Image (cartoon, rainbow, N blue to C red; front, side):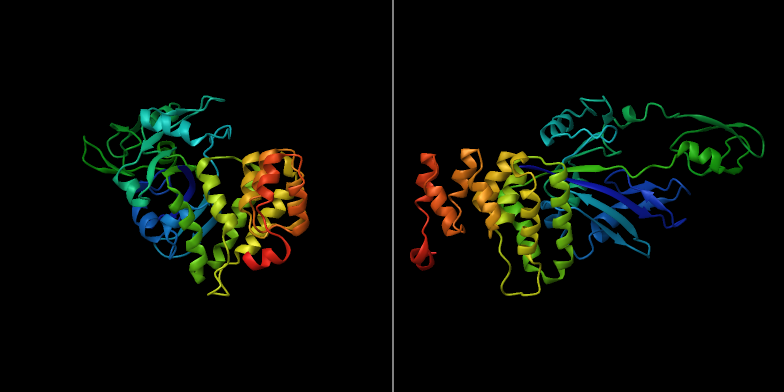
Length: 367
């Protein structure tokens, strides 16, 4: 099942202490300000996410920012689990279309604005970053990056400040360049250097993963079992807010949602992440314009929702879609009056499922 992890990464340059916009999963990147090389791989593989398990974090549907201030490995990370999108017109890109471009080795072309984004199939470096990575969209070290930068001048001429001979410069030229005529070194002024290396905005990198159901579920269990991760409960809420602003339906997300909505608090650790509170945040958002949400989401919430609020149970029991009511009738946590309502539903399929539910004394005795 395909799932996207979106990154916007900045790393502090050890030479000038300015933030460098990381443009891909790579060993080294170049500071646009001073030209010093920045060790990207060490930061993203060893430092980024701190004590977090990077793999399990990326496997889940979360959104948030993480920042390390000070030191040679200072960085800023903005993370999201939303689907990939065109950086030019923000059109949503489904993972299958992205993978089709990645597998073809040709730049992805936005179907709406024709903006081209480079692609990169999983290599050893990407596999080190995440073992289930299958490709990256918009990585500047990917294939056909040149198509994205056709307006950039690749060659400039600059006169040697000692002998006046012409020096050919390209975006691969170091800040210090030796004249081949007089053998003296020239330090490129800011005006020339910035033309070769214009300031880059922080662009999104869309890392596409191929996960199974157990890996998706494990991302939730991880946060429920480790007490120090309570602080990251906000990242669940961030994603829920983002999701209801731009809802989507994928096989991976539905699998994760089933596990998320059926999860229970870790009773062994009373001060761990409160999944009940996060469930409530999801239900509160779901209730807003319930009928407008994708039917797959309503079905999943109806069947797997743990501790569904009574008012939401009532709305789901009145859903015009029969599949939603059938799903609700499979939920063992319903109130007695909701069960009776479903048992008298106009749909025979809903009645059959609802009659399997126990009420009153028998419900308490047999669960």
